[in-house]
Structure formats: structure tokens, C-alpha cells
Length: 156
Image (cartoon, rainbow, N blue to C red; front, side, top):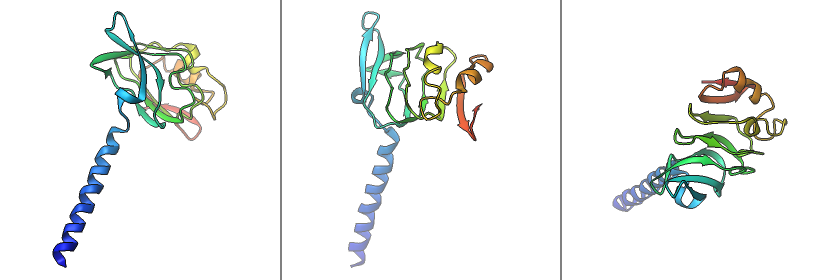
């Protein structure tokens, strides 16, 4: 009986650990991003996201090619709360993160973000609370992780 219980506990723990490890991946870049090839097939643009939202970490490469563009509306209305943009991304399209509930965004130094991306809706229930645009400008468009805590944006 003890051997049976030990065996059951071992199987349970292995299943639990395997399940926890699989959650680290969060999504499969090859499946959950709709992509377009750019510059003669040497770069990737993300044009849509099919994931479940929450925390999203954009991969620096898909199919071993650098992700350099996030297209217009690519992540719009996806229930995203946090987004990390890799250093490979150099441009973000119009309203790429429209109508999400972002409270954290990590922006690399080389990305070009236009007013269109951050001055989206003006309602804190959508992509960025209304004051992100001003805060980002006041920080000199500095790279880093921006968080929305106690009704204020801060940079880590």
C-alpha cells in the first residue's frame, strides 16, 4: 500500500511540475502570432496576436528571423495587461495596443513610438491610462519598464 501511495504521489508531483514548467512558455510564437515577412524575407512583422492576453512577451525572433515591426492594431483588444517589447523591434504601428488594460510596458531604447501608439483612447479602461503619453514624453521617451501603480505611471 505504501508503495502504491508513493507511486501515486510521484506521478502527481511529476504532473504538477510538468504543468508548472509548461506555463513558463505562455504561448507558442510560431502559432499565436500572425506574421508577415519584410525586407526580402529577412525580417518579421507581427500583424496579429491569437493568444489569451495577460502578460505578453514578444519574442525577438520568429522562425529564426528578427521581429522588427509591430503592425497597426496587431495587439488591439486582446486583454493584455503587460507587454514586453524586445530590442529587435524598431517600429510600432498605429494603435498596436488599442483597447487593452495595460498596467506595464517594457520599451527598448531603439523602438520608434509615435503619438498614435500611446495617445490612443483617453480612458483609463483602455490601452493606457490617459496620462501615459505625458509621462512617457516627460521621461524623454526613455527606454525601460513603465508601470501603472496607484493611478500613476512610474518607470523602474
